[in-house]
Amino acid sequence: MKGSKKWILGLTGGIGTGKSTVSNFFRSYGCTVISADTVARTVVAPGTQGISDIVAAFGSSVTENGDGITLDRRALRQLVFSDAESLARLNRIMYPLIMAEIKKEIHAADGVYTVVEAPLLFEYGLDSLTNRILCMISDTETQIQRTMERDGCSRMIAKSIVEKQMPQDERIRKSDDVIRSNMPSPEDLEPVIKKLHLKYLDIIAGMFEDEFFSGKSDRS
Image 1: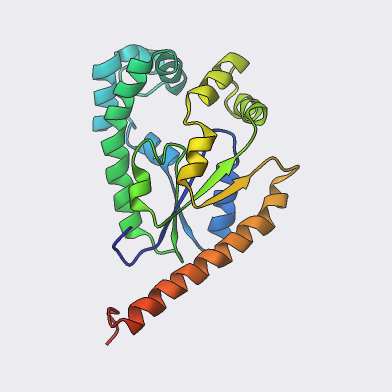
Image 2: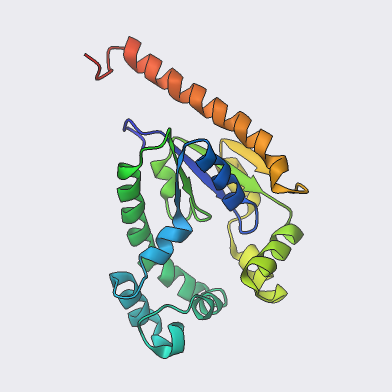
């Protein structure tokens, strides 16, 4: 995190822009990857405070078979993406839970550096944890098609999800590095990511050199 010995890369981008593919490349380079989507599932698992808060806010209709125990993600998604107030309420519940868990996982990370993969990196304020931000972008139609294929949802739902996310121009403006993922296959991305990885290692090495020569190193 900023101000700590750990170097954190924020990886963001809209739905269907290739973040998971890029995360796998970073894992293969020895990085620790923390997925905000995975964390979001963890903090609302059965028996957690998260699921209790969601049921209290939206009712048991957003749980599987109305059991009030297991979140029905599709039902919740359809609710919040058709109602801005409900989406804001959900974010108020999820933000502190996700932030706390990601901080905990960063503290435990032992990779060459840590990648925080988060589609809502800026919306949740997770960019405050990072040293640098890589943004994945793609054209709208590709995002819609990838979302439909991945989630098995209708075009209307996929289009609504894409349109309600932060505009790509705004993400680009807030990021340090940008990659367009409209490539024929994931393998085409690999040389680009490898080049960035080496660049990040150089940045980290330079930081430690500056620290050493300034006398701020902890080395005796």
